[in-house]
Length: 280
Image (cartoon, rainbow, N blue to C red; front, top):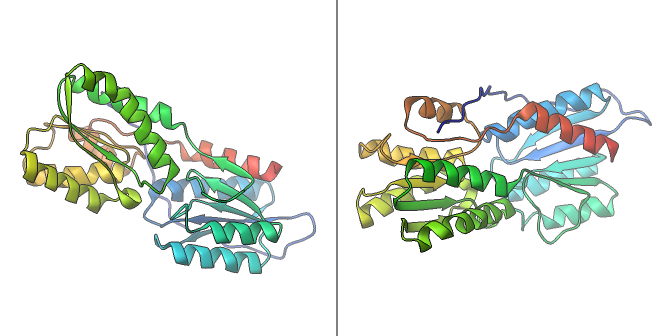
């Protein structure tokens, strides 16, 4: 079972341009890192639509540093930004920035990652139940029996918690029927490739290579799993999932090393977000 769609890497920073007039607004997108291809692309699409709507727009990257992201947001508030769109590095620690923005009358949108302990104007995200179903169906269709590993996302990211909850619920009937044995299941901080590789190596060291499927909740973790499988000559022999349609993952699907990746169309998602924010 393969899902393929093209992915183009776009990494440019759009800056506020010109002088703001009474009927123009400025919006900034705080995103975790330039390495998060999906968020970069969606930000680019968002920016294109905002420009068409006459809204000044910028993208700011935090290098996966939550403290830096908070400071970037505070600086933008000081400069008079009208709205902050935030894919939070850490949905818990960013709460002080959200409170400051709300006190100053700045619109706040949580983009894809929920922000905890705060009130804001809009939460814009995908359907975690739908994605979990795609993962489980892809895995079970290829490996209806055997040993499974589940690599969930960051436990401090609501999406990571919800996605794994749905996966666990869908897997339960297979586990109860004895068709599938769950070797190992965990959350991974930062949805990280390196941490995924470490965990899979630990699983192999503990249980051996008798693994039939690895349900990884994004492409980075799927690629981390594949890094270890390649070292152990297991590529193409174990089901591996992911989401994000990163170019390396698409190539691995084509090569038969990765089973599935979920494509998030950046132009549609970014454009629609811009329109909703502009309406607000």
